[in-house]
Image (cartoon, rainbow, N blue to C red; front, side):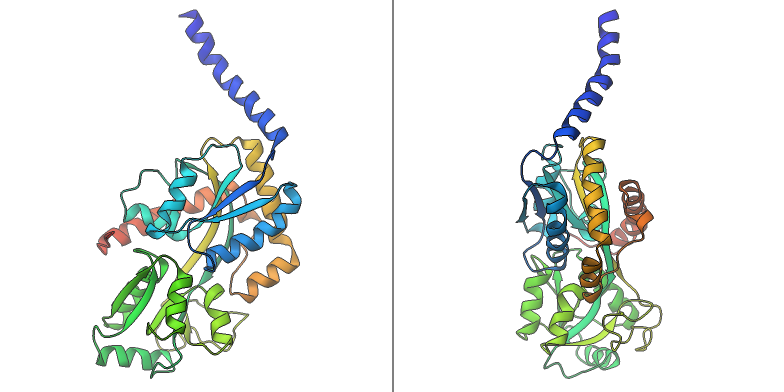
Length: 325
């Protein structure tokens, strides 16, 4: 009994010593950042932008790996199974760490199997249409969809992606019906919209604004309470005749569970420095992304925000009866 009690008392001490030593030598090799979506999408763009800034602070190469599929679950699951030594991280988003648990039967827990590092950015979505679409504004789109039920098509990044959740809200608000076409990520969906294979989609400004500026797609509205500073000519949905229609998507970074606190601090610090960099902030703003306030960039703040988002959205998603296919 005495030996067992001694072991139980000693275990936390051993873990603390290990964590302290691991933090002192971290990073001892390249850091892999898994992006659970194809290259070119909003999560990928944000991850690489910040990762480039973090590389100098950490003193080790950062290797980006796009592991798309199953709405982000394949890449997320890989990091959930990784060793918690800080050398494997994930840049996920509202879909991977809030929505997916309400839709899929996952072999991991998005709260228990990850250590929050920092909230990176958030943004509304843009409602964009193919360049040849007959309507050029929000009310025109609604009128066309009502006149052509089930004929319109919109691309979504997997089952339960931001585009689908927002699209379902849009259907309910406008009394319209159209087809949802799932893709492995936002980038391939945007490619098909540019090519004219889709009619419209709700997408992150990160990937849609460059196409709008190039004249390859039409911007119909932004799902925010105010216009984007980087695109002040695009009306909000409220201004365009759809009152109180809003949608916000956020991106964040996590480490696997068990990552020592010292390593978490060493990873959070370069993220905070990157988010404070004027060049990074300008690039994010140009892509329609909003940098969180400094008090919201801590691991504790991300953990609390994620839990609140799960409590808010899971009942709504389950009530909509969205099922994985």
